[in-house]
Image (cartoon, rainbow, N blue to C red; front, side, top):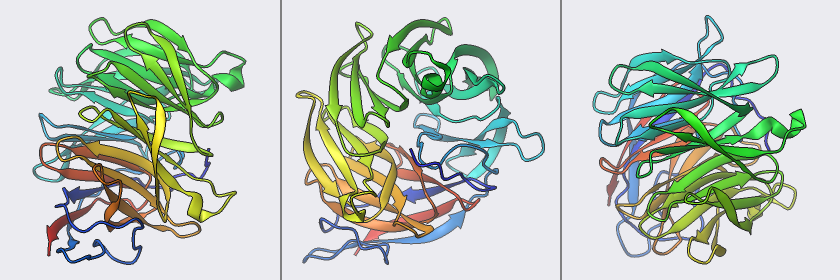
Length: 369
């Protein structure tokens, strides 16, 4: 797990959904466009910035600190209150591109997930900083208030929601340091209570859900694997070995494909990839080379596009990569500020939000040709 810390601020970069353009297998890092191959390339331009609050002790290597409700157009980003040091969630209006509310949660606010059907937001945090015990804050998206706090286990980080079953899945990352078995907590969205603790291999971090198949995908950084959980039985049904230090995970429910970012700095920069896993076979079916150390990843299932963010090795300035889910090729790149490490997308508006380390929100519009 990379231990690089976000500095004094956190930012989210919005990028309007890219129009399909030329394909390439490697992303150019100096321009916000795709490489032309006889068809019009996609170019992106900055149109606005949105200041958001300062960051705290969420490591850059753990994506999942932002989420979107496509029904309301609201965006949620976890950060740290500079005055109190407490965790908080900032609410961005996706229409006006402004922060419209700040919701206090608890120490070390990290993962954020949304149930668009209930307009409820779930945020992981440490409820007891001295012991590392964690909890999930349940936020009402209408009132922007915490309506419940659900205790989980040590060091919760990644969180994901299955809106069809109204269940929430929480990766408890630091249990290994407390001589406790690693688990994924399952919370009922109806009762706001933990209804299961699923044993997994050590140090689960990021989580993603396929609501159509009712499968949950959990990153284990120390074991270099993706664990597949059945939402029906609450048991691990498969393990998929991936590369060194997997970071982010996202699912396209329409194609039943799972996308995992990983870096292999020990081998060389050229080994960094976005892996494609078949949800039917639970095997890696494609490896997409990228020229950044990828972190967060998101999917727009409506247009079958994948978005991955990160920076080249030893470089602060980072990029968003746009990948075709049909060809598994990088279509375009866009500068995304310093040390971008998380991304979320609104599938309805095709706007992408990239959380970075620069303390602002870079807004892009992208056009073909």
